[in-house]
Structure formats: C-alpha cells, structure tokens
Image 1 (cartoon, rainbow, N blue to C red):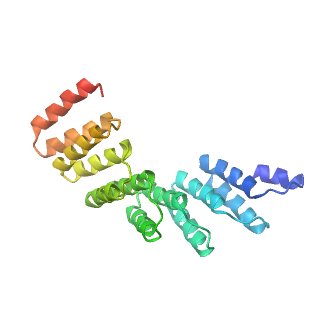
Image 2: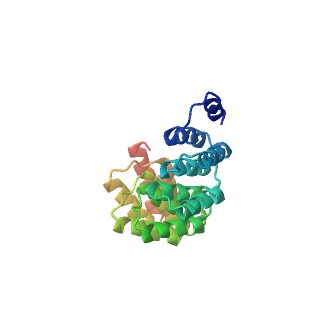
Image 3: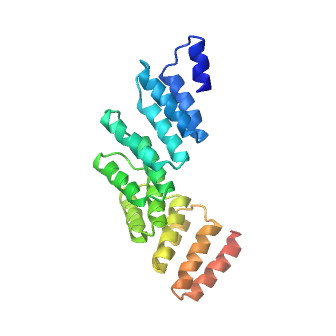
Length: 222
C-alpha cells in the first residue's frame, strides 16, 4: 500500500498489471490484509478487476490459512461473474486443506467437476491431504481412484498422502500396491513414504514385509 500511495502522490495511475504485481507480492509475503486493501482500492478506481488479480488475493489468503476469506473471495468472484478457472479453484481448495477444512475442500473439488474445470495434480493433492487431515481416509483413497480415472499423474506428494491414508485406515495391502506403483512410475521415494508403509505393515502384523522394506530402504539409501 506504501507503493500505491507513492504512485498516487506522483499522479501515476496504477493499472491492472500494477495492482496484480503488488497483490502478488503481498500474497507471497502472506500479507492478506494489505492484499485486501489493494483489491478494495482497485475496485474503487476505474481499473477493472480481473481473474488474475482475484487469484493473487486468493493466494494471499491461502498462504495465511485464511480459508473463510478465501471462500468469500471465491463466491464474490462467481457473483461478479469473474471467470473462475483451475488456478482460482486450486487456491481455494488448498486454503481449505491448510486449515483442515476437508468438507469445504471436497465441496469445491466437486464444484470443479460440475463446472468441467480441469483438476490438476496440485488440486488432487490438496483434496487428498485435506481428507487425510480430517481422518477421512476412505474418501482420500476415493480421490486417488478418481485421479487415476482422470489420467492425472501422481507425484511424490500424492503417493505419500495416499500411502499415509491407507496406513491410518488399516489398509496395508493398498499401501503396498501404492508403493509398487510409486516405484514403477519412478517417483522419488522419501523416508516419510517408507515410514508410513512400514507402519501399515506393522498394523497388519506383516512383520516380514516391514523387514523387507527396511532392507530395501538401506539398499536405496533412503
């Protein structure tokens, strides 16, 4: 807002690109209050609000875990008929995930499907992680299945969240299957992945599998 004041003082009229840059900077710094002030100033001026500016503000809320404000922003975009695409919805889902609001995250996730908005790996990861945090392991695994059907690629975060959900849900066989897929996809296997898998085998009284994994970790130097 200091930069905006300086521009106005020097009679330089900020445009949509200027506002977007300043709001993006606030977003990266987690300064959602400053982002809101800039958005309000933009709306009061003759500069038209764009999806890019709204997305930058949503990102500020996401970084600050202000999921309620993120949702308010999302609904105000719909009301203003500003186009909501994959970036907008992904930011809103991610904000809910970080706040542990798995129900809200799933609601937005479903809205993406109904609006035929493409769901990316990042979006799916946020949804799966939100379900895991909400102890909804069965729903997390359903999202993994939906991800496979949609031919969206799994990454390390996807596999970690899915294996963790399987472990917490007592699905040790599913954990092993996911681990095999992870190796086949040549996705980076981390210590957290193996720990969840060993824990799943332990809960399923599959000590032999747990020992095999410990040995494999040593060979892989995980």
